[in-house]
Image (cartoon, rainbow, N blue to C red):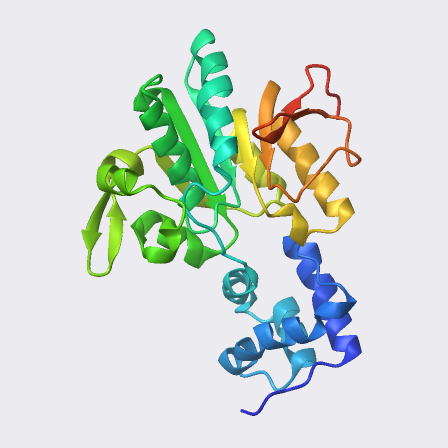
Length: 278
């Protein structure tokens, strides 16, 4: 099958449908990118053009399975262990100190966890801190992409994932295997993975109350309205005073009043206001 060109009308229809379902926003300059990402799906679904594929997503009996495939195709899984390490240091120091004063386990949610490097980094950071027992931490993690969640559960990683990982940490928490590394069971047991969609209210109901939410380098793919919707949904699951960590390039200061920003020499992060009403 030769390359099929997406028309302006087809692009707008598919772009809006994807944004409504997943929140991922393709602006007017991303037409060729979306076309190239969907090209293989036309072949797999045996649809003649992008309009036929649009109709397939709306009404075909196999549409739910195709949406799952699309979630993996459209997801950007660029990540690595100990990315933006300074935020993990804040977690290990300030957040854990607060948690030790309270009752119950420390509850952390890695929303949009990609292939698992982030939640596993959180687990290793807590283990290295020696201040909280593994059983006293509850780490949940989820992603839109079924393929990413499968990789999380497998716990096998290659060299690119270790670009910011000290050798001694690799030696402590990973086992070499055929050109890569498996994460140890000690770390793996600390994280519970699931499929999620940040635009689905059932996601937030299922995750339950949390002390910390990590959602880093995800909001950049959403438009402003979707960003606001998502971070205000996070405020519903965060306890008053709970922490929200975003990517370095992301800011919600002008987006919502539900959080108090903290800008330190080490990191920027947010706390849910005690009086947050939403």
